[in-house]
Amino acid sequence: MHLISKAKSWAKSLKRDIVALWLAARDRRVPWYAKAVAGAIAAYALSPIDLIPDFIPVLGYLDDLVIVPLGILLATRLVPGEVMAALRVEAARRIEQPSSRAGLIFILVVWLTCIIFLALAVRKLI
Image (cartoon, rainbow, N blue to C red; front, side, top):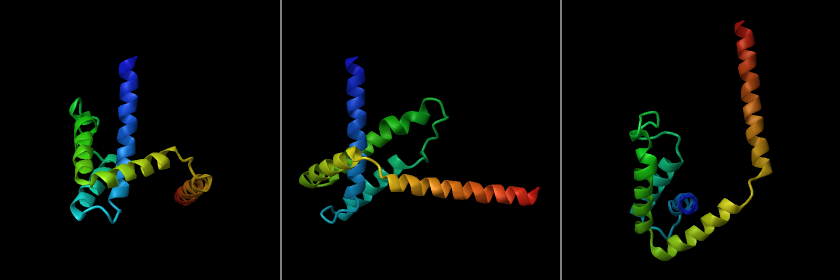
């Protein structure tokens, strides 16, 4: 049971650090090279595209379990300590913040519009 709570805590800190790195990539206090690494790691971690596809046994999850955490570690070391601490606080605040209802409605409208256009296009073909 203790192992599960440790894993949950670790996953939560990774999520917070990914958001903090995304913020670091746009922060003027962060050096350009740290911005580049932070942005690349955050984009890779948030991207649905993996270096090694997940369907490949064992190796598929290698990037999720090794590459991403090591990249986060490298990027957090490149960002100045006091800036990273402030960005982690901001990231934790953003993660805990409730989602926007207007954003949800917008996404639903976009999907509904796409479905309607697809249905009309299929209807014309038939």
